[in-house]
Length: 187
Image (cartoon, rainbow, N blue to C red):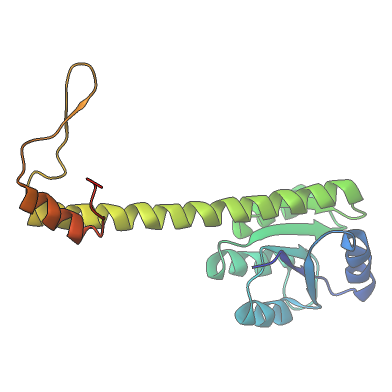
């Protein structure tokens, strides 16, 4: 997936200003003018980052980002508001599990850095999920192999840290290697 960002704001000029701020970045930017429109876009494609205004008619940004956190938890969520208050910040963080809370007018460098960090977080978490799935898959294969060949997964070490492999016939080794899809180790 490319670096897709969804900007949600009821004011077209704010969306255009954000797009201008980010035009030199390698992002695919989509926009929505309401929470409902944003949720429709989220159903049809994945976004690494969702940036939402807090005060919008129909659905507040914190409410939108709360829904996003439940339906699309991998997406980083940034709230952008011109009406900064402690209550709004707390609500946004508590309900929407917000990654960052930025105030209008935004500092362009701070916004760019926040988005870059959010994308890095998204990419890192995606890689971690893939690695975890791989480890779980390998653990399951090892467990199945252990059931079929009891003791195969048990490794003993000598005092100097070398692995001790119990005696096994060539036929047993060949059978296990075939099951693991490993070629001949003697060549």
